[in-house]
Image (cartoon, rainbow, N blue to C red; front, side, top):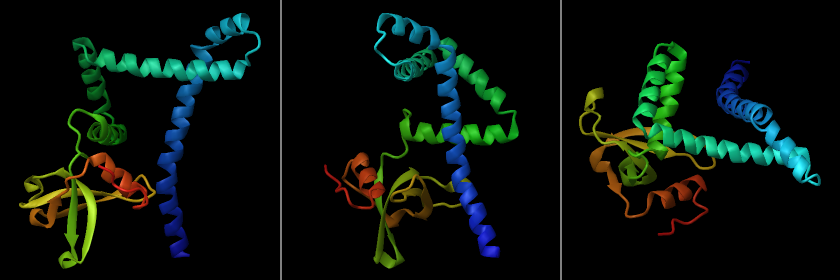
Length: 198
């Protein structure tokens, strides 16, 4: 019974973020579709009566969502946009649970997509006296602030999963790879099925 309860909570921890994320994206997409695009859909149905309303709404929703994302990025590149985002960050920083979730997600996306990418230095880590080697990415080279001098943080993505492990290992156990980060990511995520093409 104890294992069943543990499996339940483990499944909940895995499924809740996924389901909530999908649901939030769905809500946002639906809200945009219902409010902003209904007029566009009506206009397009008048001009092109052969097109189905659902298809038009979906297409318009997708296109406008793309435009909104691009415009948000453009706005954030200007002084006023940076100021507004900074203000928004400060407001969210005052809400305990939201602060944790928002800043963790923000840091993750900045590490993946931002100017200071952290998953761009692929390495191979020797474990168990060199008998086992794992592929990963250095995310931090100095762990002194945690009292772990000489250690580096290496993120190990898991195959067929959007998760991974973070190891703190001796720097001399890590060897940089002369392979593009994208090729290593593809190799790891595919479980080694897709070769690391350079």
